[in-house]
Image 1 (cartoon, rainbow, N blue to C red):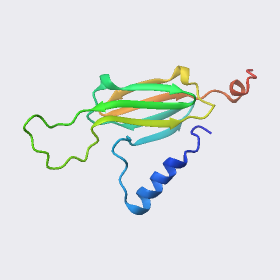
Image 2 (spheres, rainbow, N blue to C red; image 1 turned 135 degrees about the vertical axis):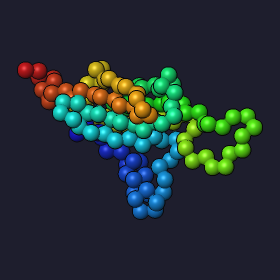
Image 3 (spheres, rainbow, N blue to C red; image 1 turned 60 degrees about the horizontal axis):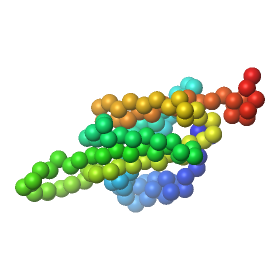
Image 4 (cartoon, one colour; image 1 turned 90 degrees about the vertical axis):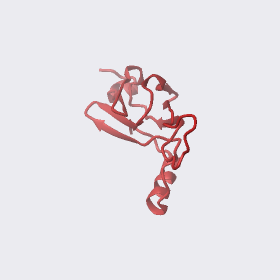
Length: 129
């Protein structure tokens, strides 16, 4: 109802669960929770410059983009680099029952929280009352 079916996400989840495959570095992990009259989407984005966060909604697709710069400097020798660097993105397919025009967000302590109000069933059907 709130998030549409995404077969690609299910394949990623199965691969992670059964094969131990890591989440792709270019895709940020997220949680989506219905909390009363809103949906809360929490994206883990540690080390991201808050000024680089871009949130768009087009045709029921919420897209979150941000840039994370690596810690290394000129002359450093990288010994292990597992954290996503560069542009990280996440697309979320939203259902019809969300009011994306009233979307609110905040970025704090490495977590982006997006809140989207749930629209009443009457409003979705066009029969307000």
